[in-house]
Length: 636
Image (cartoon, rainbow, N blue to C red):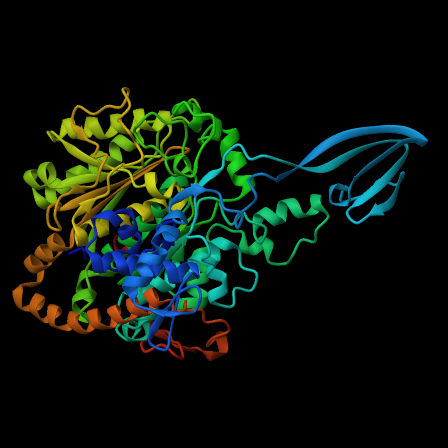
């Protein structure tokens, strides 16, 4: 009997803010929230961004004055809204007006025949031997060249793409713990994984007492590694800039490093680990590994995550050169504008509408999965269940970036599983799709055709399609985590976020059996039984996850374990909820800090007690069994 993997905690950080307890989701539907939830969301973002704080039992505004939550929420609302979600790239990331690049030039002359002046900061990192440099005044030099030479001059230019989905301005995850020159993506992973772990409401030490050390798994990664200056980005460009390569840039740049950090500095995990890579489907690939490990009994708890920080000038230029990103001039042309305003940058991403490219984003998202029996035993909150993730490649391709056929299979199998689990009526009337929805002209046609054809095949007349990249951009490998986080919010507040940056659905979008809500769609907390989380990725990496609502998950568990077991679970859950709420309050006030256990209970081989039956680890309540089942008994 396969255990059903259930979600008992989730957390993260995205352009919408903190993910746990649906705060990020609430930023998307801010205008639909009740007053208390709206105030909590605004104040939580304000403390995250450093424009408010909490001390001595009171909230403090930017001037340090004690104010009520209501007063503070009103004061910070405009600033919070202006500095979250997709927006014009803020100088904290890089200066869009002065993007550095190297301009090659050939200089020729003889003594005193070639003489020029330039700013000192534009001098090449390595001066040619036949250059004589004299300082003129502060910041300027005179150069005399003898003979000829080829030189690379540092220069700057205006960025052609100036919009992105950035974390809330002012939030610096590395300031919350001893980040020790960690690349931004790993700083985000530490924050996000800590947020997810704390959201469970059961201390990890208590969870681990119910498990053998090898019954815990971590699957986390990103799609392109850490490409800022503290990771692979600095590794590749520092030599050309005359800067020193450090000992950390190489190892901390690897794409599996988010899992390594969780194992080493949060959980002390010695169980299964890994980091799958699959372009935009990366998060769902990791999720599949976690689901499979729980279903086949290899683990009872799995931490699934992703962390991508691609808002750098170099990464943006790379995607722009591919023709994948929405350039400013193209956005202006869409609306017949000469110049883009702040509001125009917010509407840069327009899934399934007349669009011109995707908008890059950054995000880190983590899920805590447990086997259904462990969740009931511990009294864990159950936010939903993930029975399976389907993955298919595209087959033969003309171009590696071209769309293919794999997504028809992943979405089709997911719909079939929902029908098998919940029935025809549930699939047709109470399911919807969280589309990949990148905002490229090619995606709007190809993905809409996939979803529409599957809807036809399963006799779904009006399948609702959401596309939350409209708000937060495309976080590359973590995109599936963003979609899951927002889907969980719908089951708490009852709204499917509308594609509100898209004025109208484009004429070439397939929609005979689809519904693309352009405004928030109220369906009720129990109005949807399932959501299909779709990833249609570069290179032929396709995945679709089946996500079941919490009310449906409880119904399935009651059938398996009975009413008495569910009643006991609900009783235990009260304490879990109280502890989780305490963390949520601390996080909203800005007083919570990430878990980061550096040089903590480090073990070596001499610390272990090893027999032919088990291995005991100091600090772990239970041993690791060596009674390994032989799956090849018929061959022995």
